[in-house]
Image (cartoon, helix red, strand yellow):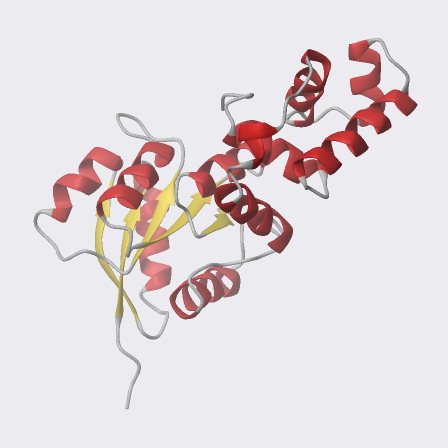
Length: 219
């Protein structure tokens, strides 16, 4: 019995890129482009015309309604839809923000066609897509923060610990963070180890996700 065809909605404001990507996807067995949209508002409008797609391939930077808002809208209104973020941005904050808004995977626009096909296959079969960019550790940390919200109810953080958490969301090294906070690298190590123990986390990624999840850092 042949595989059931999965429908894809492609949301990107760059017309030439979108058309080229649609042409590429048309060669993937078992996948069909249901419709294309230029931004989130256009996507929501077209949902009234077409069926709900199995996968939404979603750009981040778009006019009128960006990828973050569109992913969040889908999570609320159509949680069954598999959202794959598609972007030129590989910054950790962009990845985290898309995932916290409901994306099940993240693909860079310069990825090979084989990786995009694998992203489709895995998000359908597993419900998520892990690659070198979005590691299992990041996803597990997000899951921990989503299910272990009671930690923030009783853990009290000092102002300096809060300041350190804000810096963990930047690209600064620990030595650079120490210089910014006018303390020694050894003291920074102490903050990191203490916070990981308090919050039951294991990595800088986990600390950064905690800061975002609990509103310490706005992204």
